[in-house]
Image (cartoon, rainbow, N blue to C red; front, side):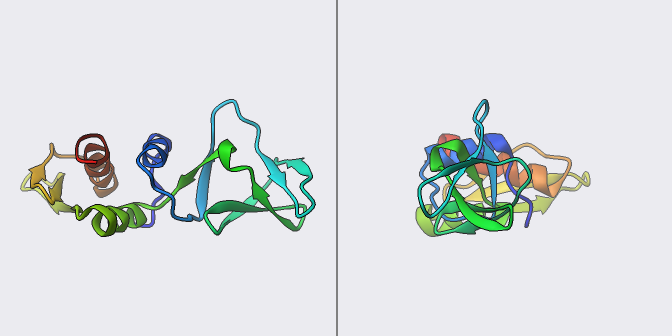
Length: 137
């Protein structure tokens, strides 16, 4: 799943030690985004495109690549990146199965846990990730 996790999961992932570089990010609430150039000067970010660079958010601002101040944003990994991180770092695998009612069920393997059904695979993966972060790590 190449869908970025929700803002709430991005915050929770940071709290739980997720520190891998990502392509996406969310600005923290009430925090203006500023970028730092190679000379240490700060620039406000308004219109931007983004990518990742060594775990920090790299944005292109007026055609120049600049790095965001880390305390101003949360990394927004994809669901697939989080599922692999949970497996590689914590030995917990999350998969989603289709139930007999055409809903989707997140299943956590490590300790086996099956959660309530969800309406979409994305919703099911996010429920499994949230449960894992809050209860198993």
